[in-house]
Length: 404
Picture 1 (cartoon, rainbow, N blue to C red):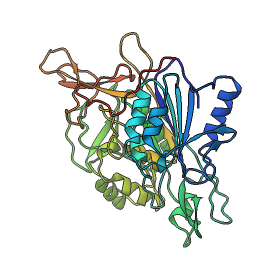
Picture 2: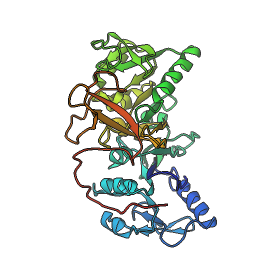
Picture 3: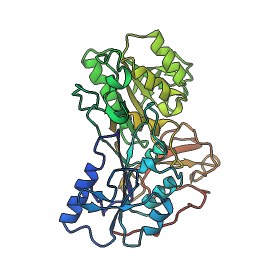
């Protein structure tokens, strides 16, 4: 964790199962901020939910403001507060926490949030999908499996042992007590904005698997024809095409059900790469279940849409993931060049017209790429300062912009 005075507001989410020491990165950050003299007065504020720990008043040697009230957090952020830490965010049940987090980041403040990733059923815990949708960086905290005699140090699930919750490794999460030695699959998510290079990294991982002699499937959303114009039906051969025109053959699918059917048809292919999973309804449950059967998944998708809202199930996959790769694009606004994490949709009202920023009421899902001749809409990578959304409702929480 680091404070970046030269950049813009940023949300770092630290997530993991019970017992994964999610507050340790926060403690180390606070130690550094305090010992270096950076932390002073109210420039760095630390809040903690009362249910987050048996001693919620402290994170290491540092005091925390214990509060379960979203309004209290909002009212405590002063004009000199540049960094906000909220520990135990998954315990808040007030959904207004999410617009508050958005307001903190939009006001050019640095925000660090820690939270549980999943409940015992493997579903995202509480408000985690909505929080993950706003993330600019994700830190996955891993626990040590709490099942006796297990020495797995990569526990990323939570489960009951006797009467208490403990971290569990994937085999003990899926198979205990029947066959805990069975192999469970893993999930690696490449996520970010458009033009961030995530698909290049995703296809690079696929090529690495091929070079190692591993059997892999590459599945792509069937309606993605932005570059070659071809319409393919589910289970036909399509392609994953990069912005520069390079393409890789892929099997077309539309839904999570289609992915499940592909696996049924090809049960020996244990490594499944999926491009644009954010368009595929019902995929989360398929991935969660099939991981328990030893299938590994690698996903490449958009975290949020043009309106800064989570892109369907994609934020939930960040809670389920064993690994996350989150590259950044570069803002295309003239003279900027800062990290770009937003998908700016542009549109032309008529051919040859000057492009305008999209409107809040525009359709959420519109497949598109770079600006091309005759395109009625297209996308750009922009930083938060240069991101625009016409007609966006007034934010529920308003904070004055902080200047470093």
